[in-house]
Image 1 (cartoon, rainbow, N blue to C red):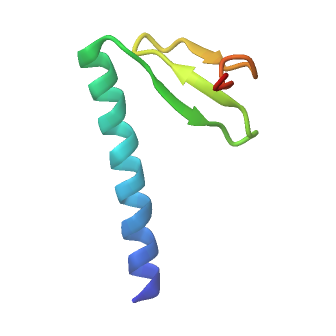
Image 2: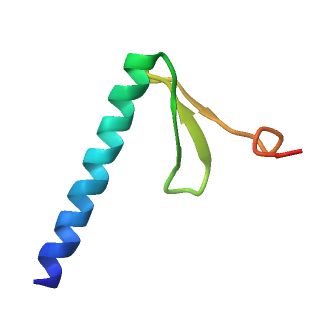
Length: 60
């Protein structure tokens, strides 16, 4: 039972990411996520991936 819940959660996370990409494409924007290496990036609908530097994450 626990394994099914974990599999369902992984599926939901994947579907959420796919939906975010579709929404970004429809709205001419990008998605932001953290890579496996811990780098935060912006991914544009055309496939371009741009790392976000520390200055962009500042809330000053």
